[in-house]
Length: 299
Image 1: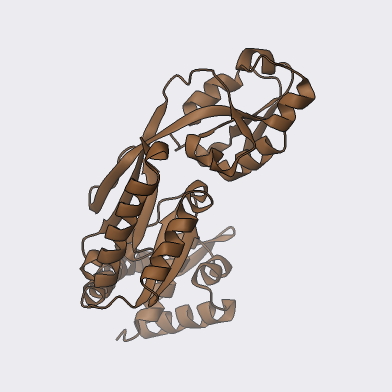
Image 2: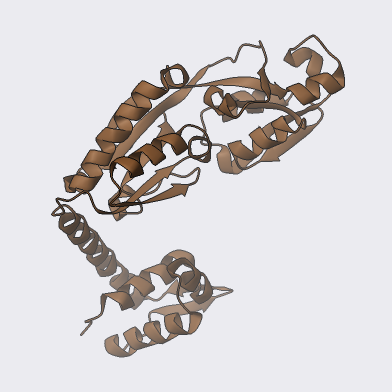
């Protein structure tokens, strides 16, 4: 009889990551612990759950059957965690916020300082990435994300459209000694800073890919903040959200972006997580601050 949820959690990690070392890394535990736990599970069930196919572990037929029940168990555990979290009625404890790196380094720092000053009992963690964390699995309590369409099962408030524009640095324009600040004159003289495949989900990716056909030199980056840094150092022209220029040293080019609105900024959470007083109040606080302090960046 299976009595330990951790064995099932490790089993699911191996299925999703494909190997013992990868599962150990994703769970933050030792490789030998993963091996021992899956061996225990196979002994309890008296069957082999995995077989090797090249460098990957694949499920046996018994493993496939267990997977169906393991995923149901995971859903139940997540539901329990969300429900228990909803009992909290205080403004103390952990608060995990996920957001894009552009927002984490420009608009959010002063707002987060105000949040922690208003509620010193909160232990705020910020996850900065360009991927949408899964609020259903409690990867985060609140998400502040640019998106065209937020997930249907999230509670969300739309803050405003995200507008992009082309930028170059004052340093680059001085070096080129040009007064003609437009893409046509800059194309043969510098590089375009474009996105790699990891950012293809961003609304501006198609605009940038079309523009890149006119350039002989193209940088590829996996982060908008890397694009901003390269642009600020004079490496080339970048397509960036307008609010990123709060960091300064960039000059907006007059060229019209074919589709200036590439989605909107949303404040998101999950209805079960919002039962916790600290999450609900932090959500309201963030909405007020984002709407009132930075209207010019969000409209």
